[in-house]
Length: 447
Image (tube, rainbow, N blue to C red; front, side, top):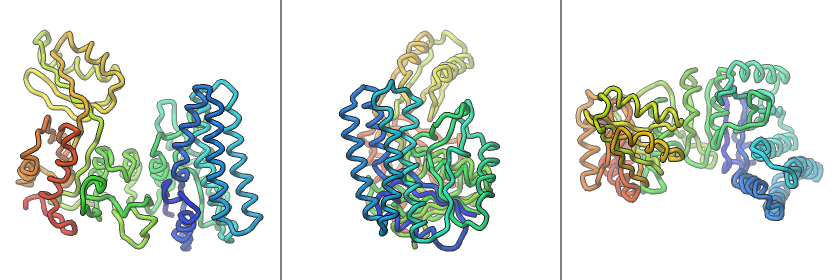
């Protein structure tokens, strides 16, 4: 069985939903994971903000607009009056859940319930549409099997047991529809896997059923070798290994959620990135297979803070490093990159929430220098140190761009460079010109 995930743009209109059905109705057994229709989750976030601020009138305006939008989708999607009425009833039931919070004290737990309604609507509408077409399918509520533990991590034993129990209730069914993103927490409350979590849902489901393949369907024809929003003439990368894909996802490639890779990698389940707008295109295959000697792609991670700490020599070097990283751990602040010398250490972070507390703690031991509005540019591929020449090509491409920090060695699949955000576009374009001079024929590392 395969697991197919369709993002918000892939189900963003009646026509897009019809396109999805043409893809999934091919006789192969599958679980179909759907996001909320594009724009819905953003609107739900706006509604929750209004509820927190007690702005009931503004919330009502947003809800009314969203209701009208769905009424239009329903009119376009279904052909019979019966199914139009069923879909309207489904949508109004979901919106009644949202309306119920308008005049009550609003909490973080209520917010999670509101945010879950988008996926519940899209999957309900899809299931009804399949019924109208006479296509046998089953709707599997994610809240009945998807659960995180008290640490916020997926409870894989629970997920596997309850999902497989759900599947066994529908013998002979070839299409199962379920929600991405939403789950229950360890206390049974409605929760979620964070924004972009539908990819994660698909990967966890794939791991739970030992799927043949996990497919992530978006409006892009695979993972590109650079950011197509910034660089012209990028090309899809047809094959990546899990580590390369994880690096690209973590360092800014928007097509794939970073958490999606681990469950698939651990269970050796291939992940295929495909376009719902061009289903005939092969997309990108992610697996344990590695292509030797290839630089695959470049990605960039925005909103980075660079922190340089020069020791005051109050502590021995080994104790100084210990204090530095204990401080970041104390404030639950992850470090993206790190370089060290005999008298100091430089790091980057992408979450500055506790930056001031971290600086205050460390100023007793070091001179602290902070630069905001930075970016990490990451070059990914088979970059084993024996592959002579790749460092020179990267540095040569960036010879006219100031680079604040370079990291290599922690992984043999990437070289990461820190620079000012203002230089990002120029850096990405320069790297593409040097590393991928012919979009369809990537150079080898040693070229």
